[in-house]
Image 1 (cartoon, helix red, strand yellow):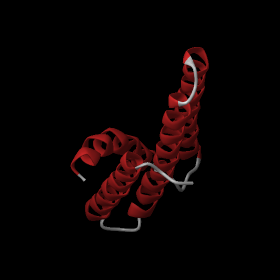
Image 2 (cartoon, one colour):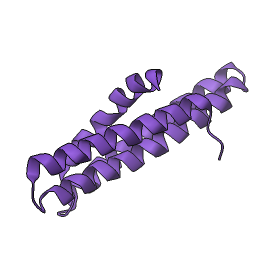
Image 3 (tube, one colour):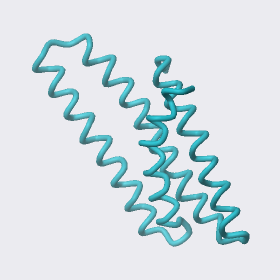
Length: 120
């Protein structure tokens, strides 16, 4: 599983941003209540890592395919990434030891990481 340079930068930005959010959660909670927050953020960080791999795989497969097949592949992978994020949020909402707020902040990591990867 070799990632492109851009996907590697994006993955590095996701990890750095998630660690910063988890550290901020520990500073904010200052107790054992920070662990569910960290679990939610880590769950969505793993989801973002899978989304990064999926996006890189989609870009590689779309560039080598013809027009209609590439479009169908792009849409299938887009909705698969969307469903993956929704499933992770549902798991965070239904599991008592995972904070939904941590998961929501984990979702917020993605746009920040996309912008930050430009500068890494």
